[in-house]
Length: 116
Image (cartoon, rainbow, N blue to C red; front, side, top):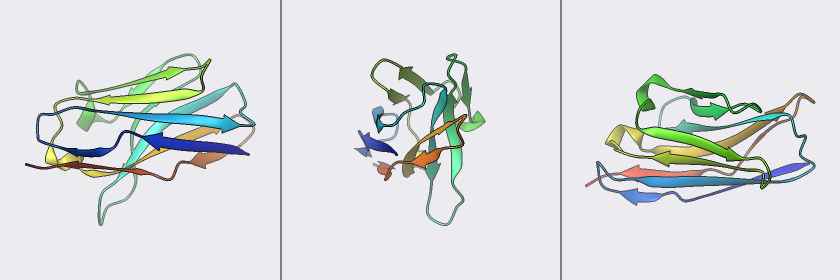
């Protein structure tokens, strides 16, 4: 089993920044993709950003140029630096890890609220 624990959400004003972190523990297969998804009220969960085992990143168009995803393979962590936040970024953000064994797991989610 793999456990994912997120941290770093909160309330921030428009234009502000937040950094989300996710720590994975347990039986982690080294070849995995980690990423962040978000779900706003009344909307489907959507991919925000992901990073594959080789470090290649992928971003939703809505966050390109504002968000940066990074991973530390030695510590089994992934981070999401969010800058220039907008009210439409308000959502519950979920960490995801999936690997070549077929494991696909989620963290419990962390609330991000962008409001003045």
